[in-house]
Amino acid sequence: MLVLTILLLTARVNNEDTLKAKVSDFEGSGFRNNKGQIIVLVEDGIMVSGTLRVNEKTKKSSIDEVLEKENAESDQNFNKVYNKGKIETKGSKYYVTLDDNISLEFEKLGERIIKDLKGVEYFTQENSK
Image (cartoon, rainbow, N blue to C red; front, side, top):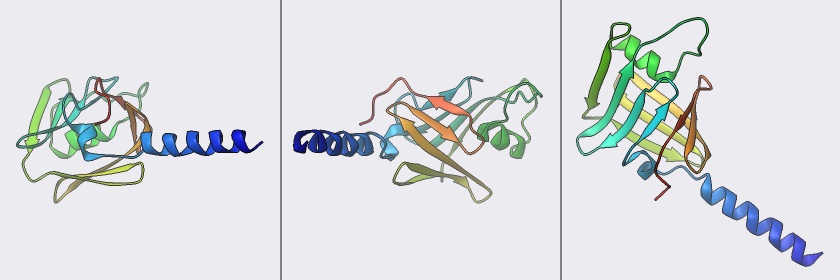
């Protein structure tokens, strides 16, 4: 019984480490959702890239809201580096501030998966650092 308890505690600690949000998770390839929208930490700040595609069949993503605030045109590629952008973390949450008017929140669901407040999932090709 003691061995089983130790194994369960070890598994829980390892899972908490895996789900700990780190700023470095956004480096490299960043995160991409199924709409092809990307958010990535680059040398000059935080880059957001994608196309505004909002329709009744798909969920609106947090990136869609960024594109709307930036007055991006539908079906036109948008690409911007927010030089003063910053990412803060607490537990499994990421708090992303792009500028004074645009903030995003994500939650780490797995080693390479995060979810925005709208429920849209984003994936990365990188393992956590």
